[in-house]
Length: 482
Image (cartoon, rainbow, N blue to C red; front, side, top):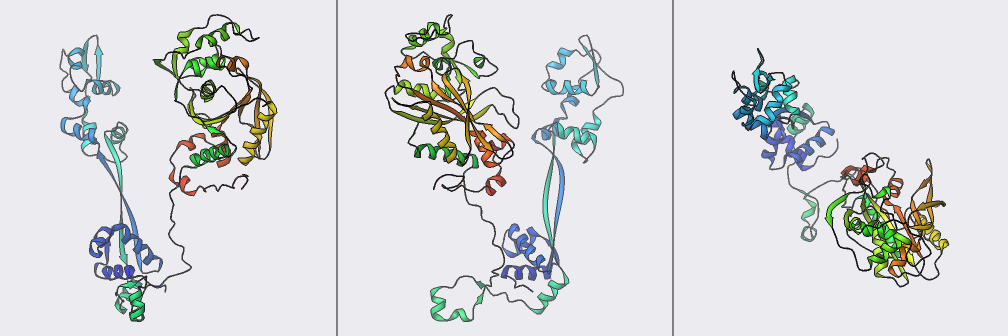
């Protein structure tokens, strides 16, 4: 038989007297916690000396709201008791229980309304519901209804009954060494030689230790941090900005026409606040109306400053890029942002109304479209995606435009975002004369592919089991260069 620990021996000795007892009672005898006693009992059970029973007890108890109704009766009962011949609806509306109680009375067919009069239906009462409130029976229909209303709630308690079996009792009768065990030798014990007669704790080198879960950040956050580190290593500066942006920076500054579908309420979260326009906004107005000082003809029509003052939850992080360029119009500029954006989307496994976007810009005298493709290819390869390709795209504020795609086994080519060279209509109002390469990439899409997820919502959940079992990525992992 495997060696017993001191705690297992103490438990068996206590059980020899008690025969069978709850973990809480044994814990009080052994000066330990119930959880520790259950653990010792399971060890003794594994060695065929004890038996552990897990007993689940279910109770149906009133909620805080239910406790009030136990004192004063259910809202429908309170109202039902007030109804007399000639009772008017207006009379009942004065009662605090009317809002809930009246609806319940009508739903259960206990009353009828004739004009402004409220009448009881014959042979009807709320006695069954009141009985269920005070003496709930599991599975009974009225009890179920009160649980659904949040008046009653099911609770579950677990207790452990531990007993000694004949083999354990025989071992106790043979005699147990209950001397204190020593797990770590001290200097004094070694010098004095007292260790020779001490009761040394034995170790089973084949037994797996208890799993220890180290503290770690969320897998999605680790992936975002990895992206950030890659871009910093590539020489980029991180830019930051507010979640609430004016429509001026979110749309107008990116040469999106004021009647563009993306600006409508079905796509954008508009706020009631407004902000003033920045200095030099007239240049942007001229760009929209007739192309300003460029060869562009603009969008035509009348540009509305009031519409540009509206505040929105940013729909993309490109609004931060154009503000950064306006503040840094001289080359070179090499900046990025990883931030949350907001759009009106129905929540499903592939869509949420808020998600992260990776934004990047490069501005210098001699940069070209080929440099843009090189930056994107380098980034995705460092993220572990070896096969990257590009196909033509269209965006209101870049020309030429491109959509990067990566190859994923089992899925094929997956589109990852949009990129291009900012149009002159975007950069000219801010005095930017050099080419600007820009991209906006989906962070959550990369995360789903890297983490092997099928439901986007899991990225925003604190699933401890998933977090504990997810590996921590090393700097050289996922195809990145060490």
